[in-house]
Image 1 (tube, helix red, strand yellow):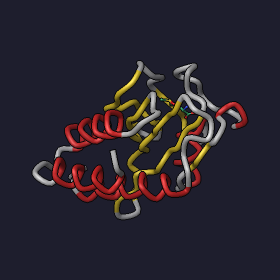
Image 2 (image 1 turned 90 degrees about the horizontal axis):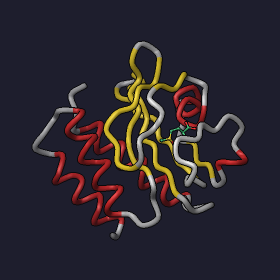
Image 3 (image 1 turned 30 degrees about the vertical axis):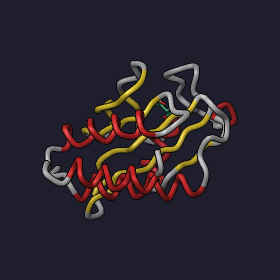
Image 4 (image 1 turned 90 degrees about the vertical axis):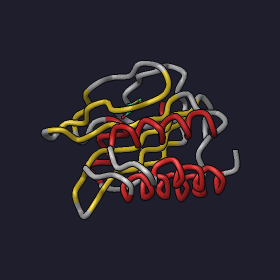
Length: 149
Ligand code: SME
């Protein structure tokens, strides 16, 4: 599906609700079903200093990730989006699904507070572009705007 249409649908889907779990679940479902070439789409939430698995679509995944570990923990540590064209070239990449070849992780930061990450995996190398990064950062922004954490 076209990315602008997805953003419009996301706004519509989340605007009537503020519960983070409900909104993260629908965001993961919309991304996973609306975008081509993904094998995992979901969230990790920062709880007592550790990333804990949240709502997602795809195969079961590792439950806890330390800050600074893997692509997700690196994104939290840097407080920046981390785009990995080839996960096998990323030192410390945590393999949850052996199908994953590329990955993008966007940190969820609201009012300066680190809440967790949006994590998207693809079975294709180089699946994510700079344009995709802008898109997923908008997705995170829409989610954060519509959630009361
Ligand atoms: N690959 C991630 C772990 C989470 S899964 O991709 C769902 C990482 O290196 O942090």
